Length: 432
Image 1 (cartoon, rainbow, N blue to C red):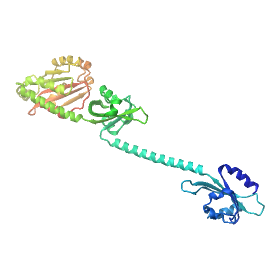
Image 2: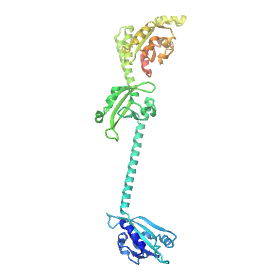
Image 3: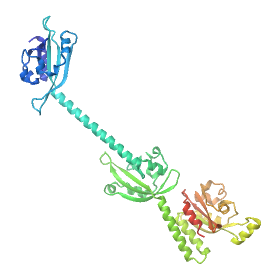
Image 4: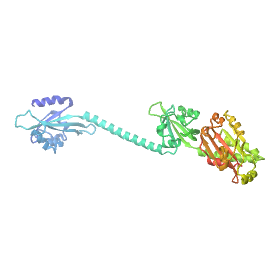
């Protein structure tokens, strides 16, 4: 055994390495003692035999081996070759082939080093398996997240997810459409900018309760970006996050504003019919009807304006001279919780309007419903000092009609911006 082989064996010993020396015809000249455990068929490996019988992996690479013998190529190697002495404990090894330059000139020999790498290959396979499992899990999570996001985005109901503090983390498209905010405007803001009901928020954020039960269809008043009030039925529950002990809260809301309006219409129709049936005269019924309307619609001030002349006198005078009537406030209702409104009511009792002037006069002439917003800054009310102290924002004027003839005007005021319910206003227009 020459010096080069001795040096190689000393290096390979810790890795349980073995070697073979072959001639230019690929026949075995010399082997180390333990080389048999790497052979495909141990009976096919002995001195003088072709190395390819014990290592069939070398079939097809004869040209490369020849190039190494001729010095045209430095070395060649196979990585991760497997042998299975038994099915439960395979071994892995690498083959390194290079020219034996220590031999006498003219002799062409190759050294074949067999390096056992079972431990390395087992670790690599385990790592690859873990990577594949992680990739599969990651793909499944991505698919699941995409699936959930598609469900959330396609939901007809509004969905909001908040932190325990009420800060919004997630909103769907339905919530953006309903409340008029963009996702960027909502995320990071408190849910109180939408839901003003503090008691509901306190109840909804009580985590121990919500982990066991769900708040279902709790009706609360919400406010849109434009200031419009909406009735929303919310369901709420707590959901555990990936951090133990930290939960989020999910709110799912359905707009029931139209349903409540329908209920109000029916209730108002019934109440007006009941009052009319129990009143001997219209004058007796009018204040009661005004009270029912204002309380049902949660208004702050309501007034009924009538002309100072009868229908017959108005008709005859109109044929002769045109409209020369005066509208006076004959009945009013005020919300007792707003102290400044009575001063405006007293002001109205001493104010008159002619056809075409003011809200009552305009409704009288057009026979149609009129709505005004931000009345504190409206030129029509700018001279009315009581308005500035009441904080009233919106006004509606409704003609009171009978057989297409106008008998009076109903004016309604509220401190919150509300979307006009045309059907409800038409019902009020027909109370005479």
